[in-house]
Length: 93
Image (cartoon, rainbow, N blue to C red; front, side):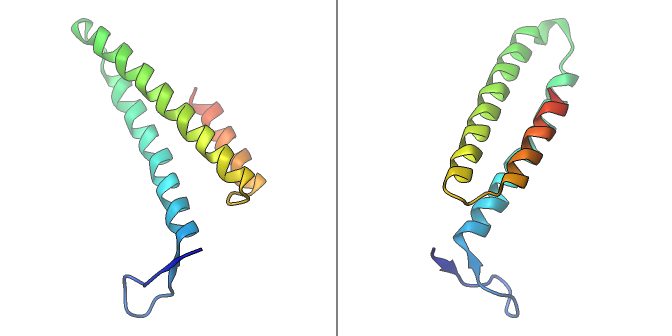
């Protein structure tokens, strides 16, 4: 795996795996924020837009879950992490 130079002078090098996992975590955390924004769209004139946003959020979430599954198959995610992701997604549905 490639390694990247540290962003701060006295920190260790950052691996590609760490960058990828941090990015995945941010995407999952952002999904919760988007879900909350969609819940706030309750005006009658926003119904069509809300349905579109829900559909896109569901597609994005499914894609993220599939990506995590692929990372698991490549042994970049542990079983513990995959199960935790599944539990969090189950609670928010």
